[in-house]
Image (cartoon, rainbow, N blue to C red; front, side):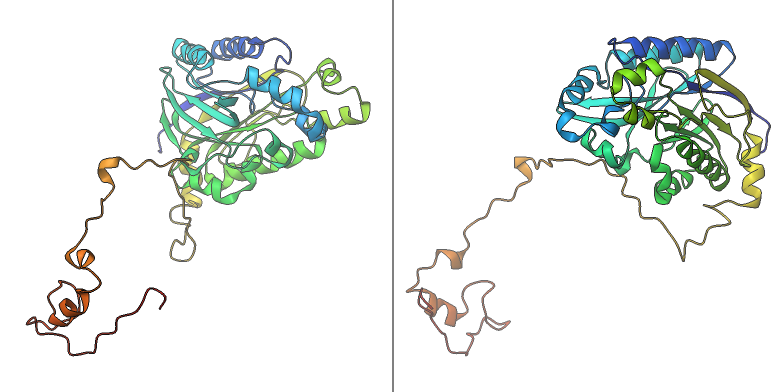
Length: 363
């Protein structure tokens, strides 16, 4: 697109409610109202923000995680359900596209899921993180290739990845190949320290350059009081600080506003969509700069299924054939006579002159 079309984006960095069921959803809806009040029409929240990111899994040994893991099950989101209905209504009320990270519960499993709601409230995409990272594998199941999908929204073509999925170049290329214009990135925030924030910034700016897309990245924030509730050990609390880089980046790799590295707040910036074509004119990774005869991606976009059911009407039922009904005593004569269809004999039905060998059951 060469025309100048402005989309105002908002990247939200706020704290979840770690204690009260439904509290984080209330914060999401309040932040949506605030961002929309600032004119935002594309709003991104952090990774698995509802009800909260499982910070406990990063610092607690597996044997001690049971109670907190079960508590996360209790607060996890079913899709569709009350949470999706509330966010859908907010998107429709404000005419805004919303990207929300959730812990999704699908019967007995939890997944790291990303939801994209269009400006009319339609849930366009529910995708699951394809490979949970390190400690997260104790909490979530794996997603599939069906979620590597770019959707057409009221603000443009939108794709999303969570956290270290951005370190999988083929996952990013799958979205780039679908001509992603706006990329929603989500990280947990409040983890690992400054090095995580530094790595995150490099990652999102590189994707913006490589995809020729805007990147809107949101990270969560933990207060000191919340960190204290997660761990009584001050040594472990150090692992729950830093690691924030909420940002909005242009296709030229530039921050449109200074990134947010601490505290709560909402970044707002105007995205001039003409910059997508400006960047791609120079370097289109999936177009004139690609070499598909040398390098290409095999993307299996089928949803993963644990059960594939074949209808009874499609199952072939075996029938006895003439030669299966023959008695053992009758077989040699019929065989030599060439009278059994499909058994040796010449085209005119003449008997096969090879000697018949009748093997015993033991043979």
